[in-house]
Length: 367
Length: 127
Image (cartoon, rainbow over all chains, first blue to last red):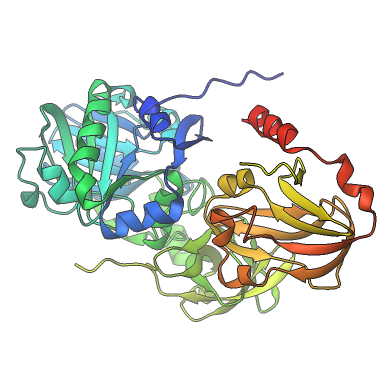
C-alpha cells in the first residue's frame, strides 16, 4: 500500500464542519465543497455576498535589494510597473512557455513582493522561484503564516467596513492595504475570483475562526453566506477566470489560454519569453474559447470537442451557469476556429451534442 | 427518512413493489450527494429494463451519475414532470420525484435488495 498523506486542514476546518458543510479532498486539503447548495451559494455571491475559506492558497514572499529583479525574471507581467500597494495577475512559466502556476503579485515595497499562489502548486512554485534566484533576494514559502478569507459580492464592502478602520473605498480595484480587521493585523486586497466586487483578506491563522465568525455575523442581515469550492468554481467559470489543471498547466502557454494581456514582452528578459515569442511568430495552433450548449446536456472537463465532425479539442471546464441558466464551458480549439460564433459539438456520454462558441466572459457585473 | 415498505440498492435507487408493478426512484442520500439536480434522463415507455443495467442518468451542477434499474421489467410510465422541474428530485426524492413505473418481469427481483434499516446502515458505513 502506498503511503497516503493525511489531508491538510485549514484553521477553519471545525467551523465548516459545525456549519454542516460537505467536505472533499481538494488537492490534499480537506475543504468545504458546499454548505447550503452550489446554486444557492452562487446566487448569494451575485446578489449579496459570500464568505470563502481560501486558507489553502499558498503565499510566497520575495524580499531583498533585488526582489524586483527576481520577480520580474520569474513572472510574465511587468512587476516594475507596479506601485507599492498594487496587485496584478501574472504567471510563472517554464522555459518552454508552459505554466508553472498562475499567481497574484502584490508589491508591498520596492524590496518586498507578496505572491498568492495555488494551494497544490505552492511547494513546486517555491522550488521553481528558488532555483532561478541568482539575485540578491530571499524567497520564503510562507503559506503556513497566513490564513485567507475572501468576501465577495455586492455587499462585501459594506460588510467588511463594519469591522475595519481602513477606508475600503480608498482601495482601488487590484490594490491592497495593510491594516486591521476587528483588531487583527490584516492585508486587505481588493481582488477576487468570482467576477464580483470583493476582498481577499490575509490574516494570521490564529485569528481565522474569530474573524470568520465576525464577518459571517456582520453580513447576516444582508444575506452573506458561507460559500464552498463548488460555487467558487461556477462563479469563476462565469467570469472566465482560469483554473490551474483545467484551462492552464505545464503544456499550455498564456497566449493559448487567452492571457496574452499578462505577458509583457517589452519588459526585458523573463522565463519563457523566447518560447512565447516563437509561438507568437509562428502562429498559435490552439486557443481557449468559451461556448454555450445548444443541445441538451452539460459539457464536463475532459470531454472531446468536434469541429466539422472531427475531433478538434477538449473541454477544460463546463457547468450549468446558475446566473445565465445556460450550460456553458471553456475549451481548446484550433486557433482559427476559436472566435465567437463557431458551431461545435461536444461528445457527451458518446453522443455529439451541439454547441457554439461565444463571447467571454459569460458574466460581467454591472459597474 | 427511508420508507420501510421500499427496497434499496447499493447504487442508491429505491423500488416500491405493488402487485406486479414497481415504482423506481433515487434515494434522499443520492440527491444529497449529487447536490442541485439540473437534468434527469429517463427511459421511454415500453423500454425493457434489466436489473443492474443503466436506465438513465441524473445530472447535478457538479456531476453526472447513472441510474441503475433495481428490478427487471417493461417501463409503463415515466415521471414527465421531472423534465421541467428536475429540482423536485432534491425536494421529494421518495415521493413526487419518482422516476418510472415498470411491469415486473420477475417479481422476486426486489427480494434480494436492501431493507430500509440495512440501507441506512450501508450509507452510514459509507461515510
